[in-house]
Image (cartoon, rainbow, N blue to C red):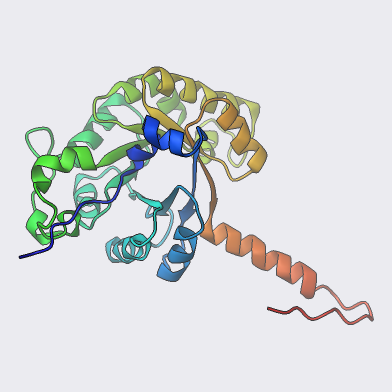
Length: 277
């Protein structure tokens, strides 16, 4: 007899009353994984964060790469989330089928975009997701009992608000049935506001906080990308339910720069001490 399996928890499961209580009421925290390296992913997965966000939008992560990283994470309690490259029905189907239960879809600017995303996430009659569970890791090749009937409850859909237009439409986007949460992207938002590279500008910060308030009023969970600790804390104080506080590649970049600053500075006549491991 084949083994009967159960799916891992999804992103939305982090925001139940029970999960919040288990964390002592604190918001959830996670990071981007962008390198595409399964070892780096496994290191991050075992660090104690609540979730990891595999970034297939701004990183060289294709379907096979994401699948290998999901497998690297499978032995750890961290929740896997995948940001897909675009709002594309075929891509959404493929990422779901390879076993990504929780998706972030970028550049959702309107309620119409949000409704398209919902349809892409679900089988007919609710949506347009193609049926291939017998062939797919999502259903563990039909070893998850009643997967087709349960799939709607197993997936989490988060859409990204990251433009001035999306901010204006945030309340309507969050109200769409099937949208579980909103992820705010201050960098693209700043660019759309004519403030490229200035995501800490007061107008951008105010817009992000307006979205947080609108989404909470809609009864959905909301989070923000904020690598600067002070900015992350400010958004948490404003009511964000989760915050994305780093990326594997950014940590590696800053860490190697610090090593270079410490050990590769121009010689001053004194020999620098040697490091040790």
